[in-house]
Amino acid sequence: MLLRFKVGYSLYPIKNTEEQPKMKFSTILNQILQFLPQSEFEAVIKKFKADRYVKYFKTKSLFVVHLYAQIRKKDSLRDIVCGLEQHQSKWYHLGLEKIKRSTISDANNRVPYLVYESLFYAMLKKCNRLTPNTSFKFKNPLYALDSSIIDLCLSVFDWAKFRRTKGGLKLHCLFDLKTQIPAFNVITTAKEADVKVAKETTLPLIPDSIVTFDRAYIDFSLFQAYQDAKVFFVTRTKENLRFEFLGQHDIPKKKGLQFDQTVQIKNPKQRKKYPGKLRLIGYFDHDTNKTYLFLTNNFKLAAITITQIYKARWQIELFFKWIKQNLKIKTFLGTSKNAVLSQIWVAMIYTLLLAYIKFQTKFSFSILKLARMIQEALFFRQHLIDILGLKSSKPPNIRGSSQLSFC
Image (cartoon, rainbow, N blue to C red; front, side):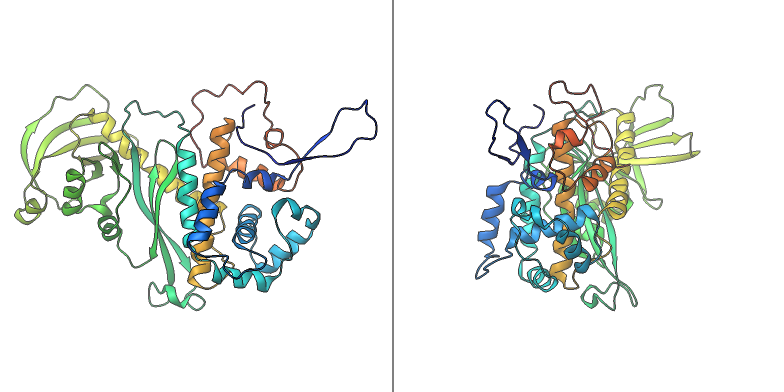
């Protein structure tokens, strides 16, 4: 059996004793809900007193509605209620009772988004136990750090003012390049500078981790903070940076490598913030006919590996593109800050659920195809293995393809 978790089912009485008992599975949606860390979810609900004085339509019911809206790409509360009413006979599997637009709206404002934020990290721990294969040979944890703006209409979301006529939030993400899932998220107003958030946020980077980011994060006090934490960074240099040459490393005859130097920051003010040595690597890309200069504090890995690490940073850009195109984080079910943040965190939880299913089942196709299959079969009463077209007796041979692909 590929899936190692409980799947809800019910046994029905049999009139003919000679017949074999028939097993009827719960819906695909209910099977997906079983993958959540249930005990942690209940503990978080109690911690934030989200269900205090609530008789029905509690936090778990609201989460079911949010998850349903994400999977089926619902645009409004009316659309959600109308869709769920068509499957009312299957509500008992989901713990749902009466559903009204006003009830969902009230719950959106009542249940703090911190409940879903905490659930995200509980689900992340569950996903991290499943380590997929990776193209990088080194064992260091590898991350990409970047952000993306989620546009909001200023006339509707006046609390999210970004520019004179625009509103927006910014999703700051630490993306695990080996597991291809977000390892840490911070949601701020769109005005917040990327480097400021990076400096003020304690990221889950253990010693010997490698984090790669673009030039927006170049800050020498941030570099020193990573150096003190024994964390390696890889980035590109800015054109106006000047360095003092300290030494040259031998480079193998690899296509594109131009030089590998040990340098130090030349500007006295900048050097005061980061007095240590840096490694400057020149690489010519024949596809773009451009020379790229990479900056790192890692002197152990090969120069070509450093260039590949920065190239892998593009995966976080693909992740942002994927969630904006395939998750409901552009249109929102409520206008309050709490409702918007709740919806974004549920979207992030859904990405982890998809990753968990893919890791566990060794599903060989893209995460996008997996999402589409679940969307169509959401209320089917079949085993998830059968929906995905997998055989429980013999896992498919997909060596090297367990890494998520968002395209």
